[in-house]
Image 1 (cartoon, rainbow, N blue to C red):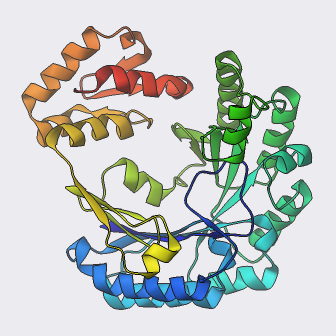
Image 2 (image 1 turned 180 degrees about the vertical axis):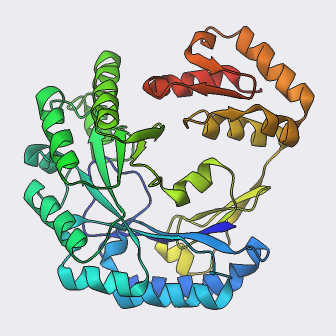
Length: 370
């Protein structure tokens, strides 16, 4: 089984925190979609005949595509790959792009999971982040989606926004829980240099929250969502029973995937490929770049992805993939680590407790093979 990712790199405006590749406006929109169809034809052999288990339309803003354009990609996919086991087809959407007719069109095109970028239910916070919608619009969008039959909806929440913690954050969490969605992705605000927030921080007009506030807000989100019945199964992801994000989980478990579109990444089990982060360059046919992963790269990546999940490291899998000596080395590293007490260690697994996911990067760095 493999995954297929379509990157739609167009946005109506730039969110203040986003450093994903995107182009503001829709210049070359139709040309880019046509080029993506050509790339799909050319690169289909990359997956070596694997059947497709999940499809994901990300961005950018995929909800700028019409249902017909989404349907064309799905029909093209079915012509090139075995899709008999296809179980999850996700589209990322901005709430203010959605209408009842549009949502019905998405269902007809095959979309069976929506990922809505809500981020907050505080209108002042949404304005600060330069989001296009308001809280009322987000609620209407989820309600419309549920009424047309979507029963697998994920919503995004951002915490760690200066000035919007405490009771303001709790109000957003409660309003999100009131929506009765199946999945919630909760991300700590990261301030990247090439963003509006990053430029403000460089000028000294914007500052991140302290580490203490980060931990407090992370635990606030963790406890509120888990007490409401959501499983905290990955550092930023919470799901009701049997509603984990299957496509994203494939990334965390080294399942091959093919990425189509400007800036899209691909992985075949041995190499990573990524397309040029430029619509113009993509249209001119610039070839993807590639990186051959060494054994050490693959091992470190295994640590990095698995320790961000509730399952953690499967010790039998480590032996199968990397050998007995690697497992012995890992156990020695753990014994010598200052962070060993944060790990849950059993005969077959090593994992972090979900409430300790916030320190996963420190643990991973401490255990990396250099």
